[in-house]
Structure formats: structure tokens, C-alpha cells
Length: 91
Image (cartoon, rainbow, N blue to C red; front, side, top):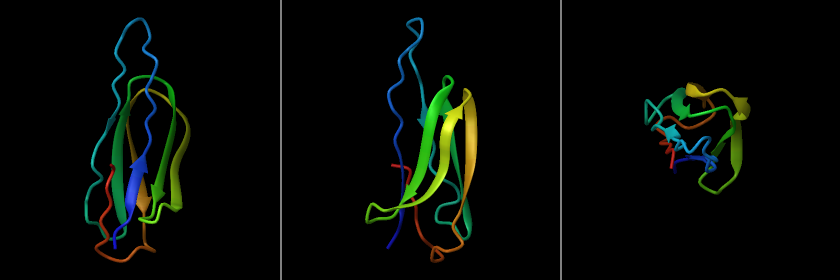
């Protein structure tokens, strides 16, 4: 059984006709033992909610919940309580 990381990134309202570009990279390492890093990017100051869900759809951790500035961000998910070899996805 593996757990899944799901990230909802709402569509941004473009400012001055500039296209908004968000990105979310695959967590690394994957599979991992103990901790994994998730990297994502924001084109502008925006609200971010990043949570980890089980395969059953239960939220098991909230990694980010608040306003963040533009740029590339990283968050480390520590999963010492997860079985070794668990695979996570950012889809």
C-alpha cells in the first residue's frame, strides 16, 4: 500500500495579461525512508495549501497552509511513522 500526496493549485487570475505559471515537481527521493522533499513554484504572492493524503483519502499531514511569496519553495515531509519503501506521488 502506498500513500499519495495531492496538491490542489487553483488557477490564478493573471495580472496585466501575464500568464500565471505554477509548478509542482515529483517528490525526491521516491521511494523514501524517513523524509522526502517536495519542490514547487509560485508566479506571485498566493495562498498555498499543501497536504498529504492516504490512499483512502484521509488527510494525514498539512505541510503548508498560508500566504507565500513568489519563487521556488521546498518543504520536507517527515514520515517516520510510514512503512519503509512507501511511494508517494504529487499527482
